[in-house]
Image (cartoon, rainbow, N blue to C red; front, side, top):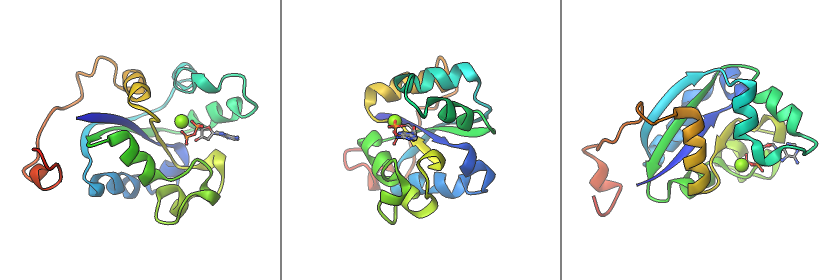
Length: 152
Ligand code: DAT
Ligand code: MG
């Protein structure tokens, strides 16, 4: 089962919409495998966003993601990375489709509410940053899974 890392960014937390956002992934059928509330350190932020080091928005991005506690979640399911990305919508909220999280809750690229891994490889790396050895992740089944996952 593919896994992806979702973050409710500080604006999502401050605005009190964190569980409304999480519920969209859950309602889509993705299964929660891990959940934590944490304050991201400078080091974690720089590791997580390593691909953006040197870009003009990097410092603002790091100060934003470290500015308040966030929720980190692991969701799993069929093509979980793509499913989560389409549920989130495009990076720039004003161009994200209505009905997506960013299209419904955001306006600015630097306040786009939610993070989701962009590939299975990124997901594995990012889950490692936020969930370490994975001992707090759960491998479990739901009674309803066979109604969501055709082959379960
Ligand atoms: P995404 O979060 O959709 O995966 P990304 O990985 O390209 O997008 O960038 C990570 C975050 O960095 C993104 O959510 C918002 C910020 N960002 C990206 N491009 C930006 C830009 N051109 N100006 C300001 N912030 C930007
Ligand atoms: Mg990205």
